[in-house]
Amino acid sequence: MNEFVETLLELTWHEPKSSYDVVIIGGGGHGLATAYYLATRHGITNVAVIEADYIGSGNSGRNTTIIRANYGIPESIRFYNHSVELYRTLEDETGCWIMHANKGLIWMAHTETGMRAERSRVQLNNACGVETLLVDPMEIKRLCPQIDLSGGGRYPVLGASYHVPGSTARHDRVVWAYAQGAMQRGVHVLQGTRVTGLLRDGDRVVGVRTDRGDISAGVVMSAVGGDVSTIAAHAGLRLPVRTHPLQAFVTNGYAQGLGPIVSSTDLLCYVSQTARGQMLIGHEFERESSYSRQSSFQFLQSCSLKMALLLPFVRNLKILRQWTGRCDISADFSPIMGFTGVDGLVITTGWGTWGFKGTPAGGEQMAELIATNRTPDLIAPFALSRFAADHAMADQGSTGTR
Amino acid sequence: MLTITCPNCGPRPVEEFRFGGELPQPPANITGEFERDLDRVWMFTNVDGVQVERWFHEAGCHRWHTARRDTSLDRFVD
Image (tube, rainbow over all chains, first blue to last red):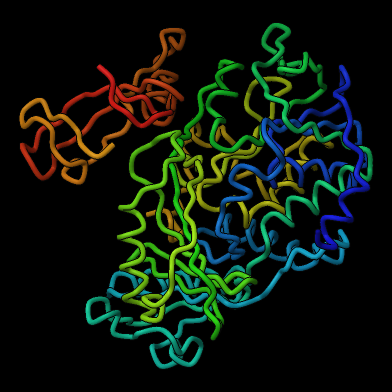
């Protein structure tokens, strides 16, 4: 057993109480981060985080651990840049090692259209105070010598945007850092507890129904990944969210080391190296909406072919394992945070393929929203009401979202 | 889900089809004209179960059809 797990053994796991000030459904990064910031920034500790399985068992433990802020609209750039800054100081703040590593992110384009998109991305990022540089193929070769600039003769690399703050962190450790910080301050984390319904008083949501009994709450927050439409339906709420599977895989160790995170928006795939030296490779989400977590051979085939064209050395690696997560893809590809129009129910969803990078900022801002009962400026553009107001936040600025 | 049965062409590989998403069906309890339009354009039932959805046979007969699929198992049902 490693040192990190031993520190966790001092945590106290509680039986559910009948009532809390705040009940958070979903013990992933967002739910636990919200509980952590409620406790540390606002002194609200009469909080329960309810998790159907074990904490971090959903998308928080299935993502590809990339942290970045090179988005395509100013509101997103500001929000994710705040998240990048919180990640940078998270180890000092929590005292937990999350294996945060700043690597830089090469975001390659293979077409003139792609280059045009990267040029405007660089302009917009810099205007919002985020360091993203336009780099030519020779500079790409210097940053990452393994890249085949001819793209296997099929996808020549024309250039890239290089996002300097691009980082990775160990996703389980982020989840556990927040869980530990919250639990040490008195937050109850209820694992293996499934929410089966919401308690209503007229139109108001006043608690949750679980398979371990009813729990009443001043505020209920849904931080559910994958099943959010089901939770919302309990409150008669319909969401602009569809659930799509997203697959990823890792190879065995690559001894030489890959420096930066490498990504191609035209080929819709990306790779980073884990602390164990494995190549962690991801892809766009599946076109068909589905709740199935079935992994497919077809994905392995198409994704490893593309990766072998860009980084020829991966041909010599073996695929160790693959897995699938369920992404909540919102109708405009941006997250949905804040009030729902149903009293007593707030929501954080629509995280799609970028929930991990938004975890600290999402948690911090939702905690402020719950504590002050008003929407913080940073997340005001991401309210659910934006769809009725015709202010969709269309931003397909992700490798996985096109 | 490796094959899809097209009403015109019979069982064909899934790669030939394009997914058209769930059939927009605003619930009956939404009555206002604006609210129904809003729901039709933006909202989804996104059910964990049998979903009525549209498929386009792009590499075949070039026709749309409606099918029912269990989204939790990823299997078509009758």
